[in-house]
Amino acid sequence: MNTDFRSLNSNATPSVLTVSALNNAVAQLLERNMPLTWVSGEISNFTRAASGHWYFTLKDNAAQVRAVMFRGRAQYADFQPREGDKVEVRALVTLYAPRGDYQLSVEAIRRAGVGNLYEAFLRLKAQLTQEGLFDPERKRGLPVFPKTVGIVTSPQAAALRDILTALRRRAPHVNVILYPTPVQGDGAGNKIAQAIATAADRAECDVLLVCRGGGSIEDLWAFNEEIVARTIAHSPIPVIAGIGHETDFTIADFAADLRAATPTAAAELAVTPRIEWLAQLQRQQEHLQRSMQRQMATQSQTLDWLSRRLLSPKAAIAAKRQQLQQSAQSLRYASEMPLQRAQHQLQQLQQRWHTARPDPDRPRQLLLDWQRRMTQAQQQGIRQRQQSLAGLQAQLELLNPQRTLERGYAILSDKHGKALRSSTELQANTLLHVRLAQGSADISVTSVQQSLTD
Image (cartoon, rainbow, N blue to C red):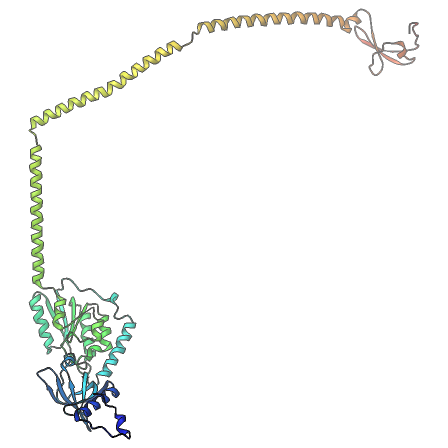
């Protein structure tokens, strides 16, 4: 039922409301004007009904208010409040109409101060994530066959008993070394980091479990300290974190090489049950046996097949002898046939050569005839040239001036050696040269007489 309260202030006659209508109107008014709000206080009169709903009173020094947390919300709470607990609730302000009680409908609950711790948790997580401390690349793999498991936890912790029970059940052959340390309280973070560093320095174990049981965020806060996260990240030994319950997350979980939901789960992740190794060995043994049996069966079939192909030594020798004879015949044929073929080709070539070979006697006779004729021609030519030469010599002898001089003639020449042929070329009182048949002389002309025929 919706009621407009503005009508109550009008001049009209006010309507009369029932108690139910009034309570419903007030409830709607509260729900519209009061959003979800965080409220802190102390738990009082806590009751858990059979239906699973929680009923309690939230109070402080000056006031109190009733609260209800229905089962659908209460089942996600990580703790059950007790009398006197300081808590913070995220609630919707409403009115329980049947009784007219003003109350809080709680959506979430946490211990007081958890909000500040959670903010600090988120800041540190963001810082270390940015530094790469949680990168998957730097995570180390767990050993396949660990011989020694180290445990960093409190000797009084129930988680230690759970871990030892799981290791004893799964791998009783594995050695266990405890590095005791407080897991909560003042200075617990430094002591946890020191225990992890001690395990790393001693190098006695193959894998290290950092564990504790469940609790509130305050109880687990030692594992949210920066020194613990950095010590885990720089440990040379692979680290498995098993802290709290499945829904609990700490900074140490992100820094570890592997996170387990619980301490018992951490022990189960650290070692493989011996029974599984034995079962695997048994399977491998059976596989090996089957493989050997198959191989033996195959070899047996091969042996039977070969035995059927195996002949007696006598038959084998006869077969080899026949094969040798065939090979010898093939060898003779292969060696004789090329020789016969070559001989036949040689005979053909000889016959063709005899047919095509020229007769050297006729060219030789022709050559002798040519030589004789050439010799005769040369001799005849020489005689003709000798006769011609003799005629030329006779003619030359007739024209030789010396022969003329021997007949009493002389040759006159002037001082320049020019032969004189006419008296006109002579002058008186000139010096002439006279060449005779034998010797010569220089003469002087005293006078010149011209010939009448000149």
